Each structure stands twice: as structure tokens, then as C-alpha cells.
Length: 165
Image (cartoon, rainbow, N blue to C red; front, side, top):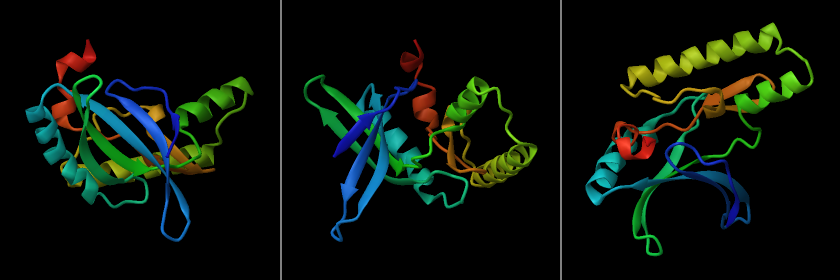
């Protein structure tokens, strides 16, 4: 069940969805839908994105599933990337909230954040994966001083000049 549509990003639409398991447990996920210009591009991006499924790190928002879907209404192919939902917002929201209240982020939180981000970046670079779109809105807050990198993309999608015009 789709709960809400998040602010669209440069590469596509983000939907918050809820899945009810057989045990009646409700889990929330985010589905990133990226429109692909052609089937070849979708297949290449899907192959690249398969490596993202293998990521296993406490400071990385892992992809749970990938699939391709066709929208008959607009005759378009979409690559869909399913990832966990943090529910706590992102670093951009935290910064905005702190500014509105004229508060500072504590040194302890900044040091923890930097350590976690360096650790996560070191991990993905060892896997030969690059984030390609690092910014505060792509860093999820999981609690007071814990963060996760999110919204990974693929080289195929990021180099699609049609998306950036």
C-alpha cells in the first residue's frame, strides 16, 4: 500500500509503502522509481544495481529488492529500487530544524556523523561502488546520533543526460 509520495529527486519518484507480512507485521519501505529511456538502459542499470543489493553496513541504507516495471498510461519503463525506510527524516531536515530554532548540532553528534560517513564511504569504495549524489538529503537519520547513506544510483542512470535537462 502506498502511504505517500516524497519530494521527487533528480532521477525519479520516491514512494513510501507499507507491506503487511504473513505475521501481520507492518513494515515500511521506500521505492525509488526511475524512468528509463529504453529497455537496454533499464537492463544495464539493473545489472549495475545488483551490486547494491550486496551492501551490508550499519551506516548504509540497504536495497532490499530491484525490479523493472512498465507503465501503460505513459508507455514508459521504470527501474524500481526498494530500500528500508528510516522514518526519522534526513540530515537536510535536521539542519533546517536546527536553523529555525537557532540551535547548533553538538560537537559529539558531528564527530559521530563524520566517523559514520567516512566508515560507510570507505566500505562502499572497497566494494568499488561510488555514491554519485552525496548531499544532506541523501543521509538518513536513524536516531539522535546515527546516520545512514541512502539513495544510491547507478552510473548508467547518472550519466543519462536526458534526465538532467
